[in-house]
Amino acid sequence: MSHKIIGNALPNIPWEDRPGDCQDVVWRYSANPILGWNPIPKAARIYNSAVVPFGDAFAGVFRADQKNGRATLFSGASKDALNWNFDPDPIQWVDEAGNPDSTSYAYDPRLLKIDGIYYINWCDDMNGPSIGMGTTRDFKTFTRLSNPLMPYNRNGVLFPRKVNGKYLLLSRPSDTGHTPFGDIFISESPDLVHWGRHKHVMSKGGQGWWQGTKIGSGPVPIETTAGWLMFYHGVVGTRNGFVYSFGAVILDINDPSKVLFRTRDYLLTPEKSYETIGFVPNVAFPCANLYDAETGRIAIYYGAADTYTAVAFTEVDELIDYIKTNSEVF
Ligand code: BMA
Image (cartoon, rainbow, N blue to C red; front, side, top):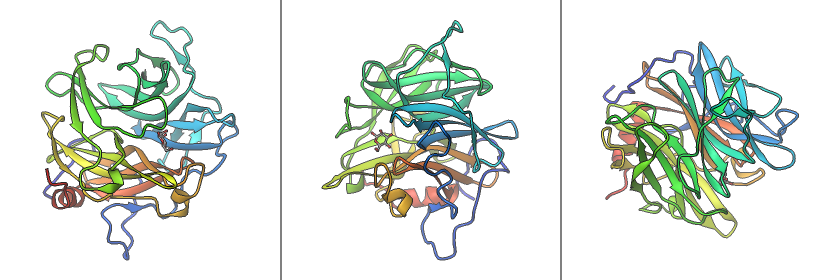
């Protein structure tokens, strides 16, 4: 293996070998989707969600659209990261003093662990879409911190460790609606409260029409020997509306505002019926990844058609070689 993940082993990562008749560098789980319509009494659809290893099992923060149509976050637990049990009620936030707090809506969570604390970012309501930030240690008590960025913004993704002594946050400034534009920016903070030194990372478009309307960060970046590996979604506008696919980018390990390589072609685009038919057709939206540094295996969790939760697999060495040889030309 020439490219390796820098991180922990995860021998119980969900995994399935690439089917013999598949040539793709990213392939779907054969039992997709892992969550279908009305998965729990209080949710019509659970998708665009985030999972992490937790003890010797897994935990997650899930986007659950309730039957009034409102997006909320639920916590869940799983032994195998494929079969999930959810709390029956949405996450009840407390503020930093321990008093009840709330969000009017919350969607597209990202989840990661830094120094023993699990951090959650999501699209929050601060007089319009903004980046929410919260913590938990046990997936029972959830503490809401102050919002790191001014509205309007979606797709806030923290890096899993400090870089040059600073926390880093990727985000995608937007408008209040179904934003017809969008590039990825990065901000830094000494303390997760004060954010600044904002820099542009990458723009929509390039050589791929699939990412011609807007792009946004996906799951938490994975540290590798080639740089930070991050999946991101790319959107194209069609006569029938937006189509969401995903690709990947490699960012410089010491200065992640620098793009080293970026997929020219999508890695996965809506093709299967659970991706092309649903509440919002033609959406594949990655929000989480699990990885095993020992084998290089990566499991990608993506929302499908704003209805289902699905999983895809890839292997780090082959994926990085693929990205390097099928890259945007800058
Ligand atoms: C985006 C977000 C995502 C959603 C996507 C497609 O703006 O709202 O949650 O998956 O649109 O509808």
